[in-house]
Image (tube, rainbow, N blue to C red; front, side):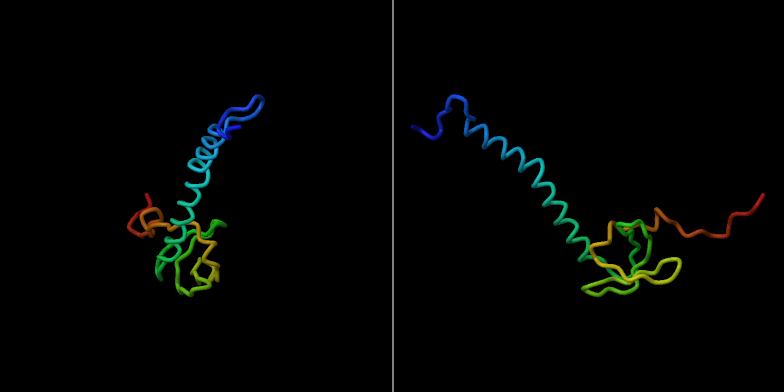
Length: 104
């Protein structure tokens, strides 16, 4: 009996291989890319960058350590784990308010 022959009542082995390949390219490969991108982002974080944590806390990196970061927030300072950083927030998205506007 040949292994690559379709058997009555069974699955075609080529069909199973195709399903596994589709699963890999649509599920596993994009996740591996996201993990690699997140790892390079965490390793590139430097003092002075504005970040957002996974919990939604916005802050500015004030100290970088290999096991944790210390961020300045409105209420003081916070010690966070590197995996808690979600993304970088730019100054363009959160501009500093100036007092040039006059009340009418």
